[in-house]
Length: 165
Image (tube, rainbow, N blue to C red; front, side, top):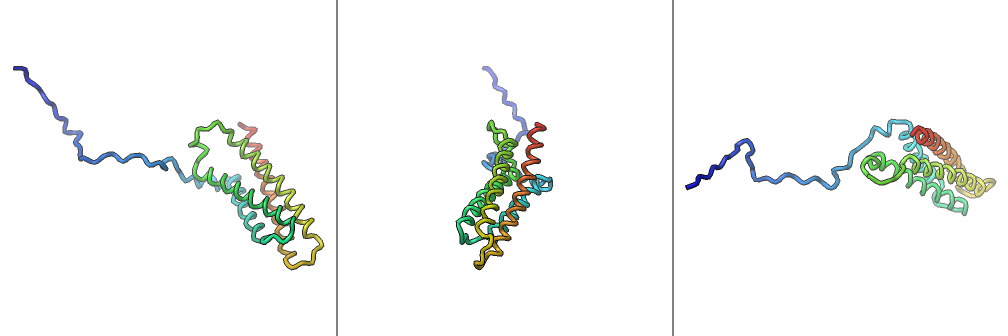
């Protein structure tokens, strides 16, 4: 009769527990170190100035302020999305054929252009006015200038980054 030999390897004992499946959110990483760099600090400044502009010019009492608040809110949301892209490391995880530096450069340059138009419209709408709230709306326009300068600086640094490859 033929014999059957069974070899038992005791070094790989099974406990009956199944290995944990990888979480669907395991790709998320928290990249806080980006926000201590100059572009990260500029994004935080842009968000802070955006909140100040919204607080000073809300509610919109004139047509020019409607456009100004539209610019402030749209650029605030776009900048907040870019902050999440950097915070969660989405650029490194997504394998999409996107030129991220060029996309961010176009977005920031467009935001700077819109802020330029926005604060001019805000000053035209409230210049020489004696309505209540004129001071706050003029101050909102001044912070619009500050945010315009922050977006111009961001555009410059993104341009330098894009040109360096």
